[in-house]
Image: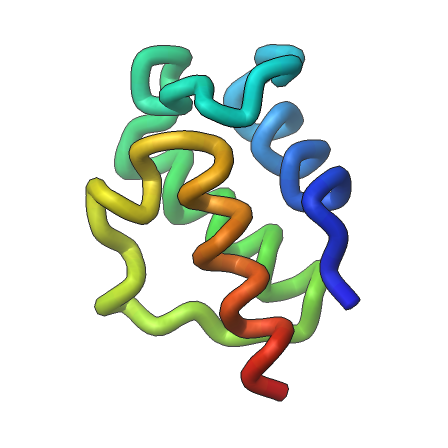
Length: 78
């Protein structure tokens, strides 16, 4: 089971910012297209999932909560 805290740790590592508020907008803290690719790679490797390209939308990257929900979707599909 993928936990929110695990996802947040990976986001923190990639953007280099401590996350206290899950409504934070990561793109305002340095989450760019290269960082998104790094995040996806970390999520896939760490959790053994494969994130569809169609899920890599601005909406799914709009907040920490949105990223958590996207990643957890793959946990429940297995």
